Figure 1 (cartoon, rainbow, N blue to C red):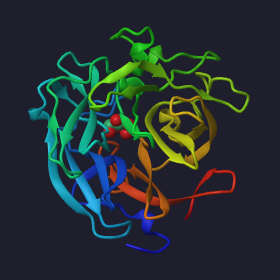
Figure 2: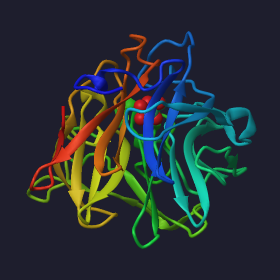
Figure 3: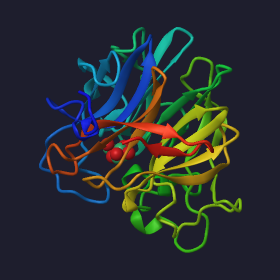
Length: 325
Ligand code: FUB
């Protein structure tokens, strides 16, 4: 795959894939996506139509080379605490092991975040029997900083239930009508330091601030800029780039900070709305170039059957991100 229009083509066409988290491990590109599957569940704001039951891992030598499907690396029936909906995962390497982080509903229907451990980037991964203690909501993304400290970012609104946790306790009734409105601060994504063994939080869960150029928190009614889901953090030139989806306005945006815990100052849009309701991504450096991995629904025309794509990104002199083609 090469040429100016290569980003139009899905990376994977034999199954439906979404929410691609990309990493370079051992000089090879690995992608950890959701595995969308056909169901007859109607679309709703609760995301019931995203009813996934397993994960595949994909890899390739570099961008444009053949994609290998490593098959099923973790499945719902092998995770004792899960009832349904294996949503967007991420992976990390630390201290000789690979960790797959994944959200799913527990037996009470509450989204939690699990971790599964493997010896190789392509798995298989053995899940811990319980979710990460204190974890909630969806879309984990792991940053292992240069000093070896790992951080887990997470959270997603509506079906991802983050609005249900505004008091620190889970309020089951809090779906779309519980997202704050007006000029109050928007709900913030969550971040926690991970323990040395990468399987629990240390120091509690914090709210990561996304602020405007005056240092004010992005407000609830600012749906073009407020966090909805799909947190991702990468590091460039010593700065922390926090990127995310705005959900119902369908943008991928980013904000830049000096600390992995924030605050992050809103810096702009990375991707305009694509085909399909959801937009979710990762950003990774591959052999000296930077890439945006994301999904759309161009392969199926259905919101819940998505396909993963990749586009090159460039930085300008001020460190702002732009699509290269
Ligand atoms: O794939 C299921 C959910 O859709 C993800 O967790 C969200 O980020 C959205 O892409």
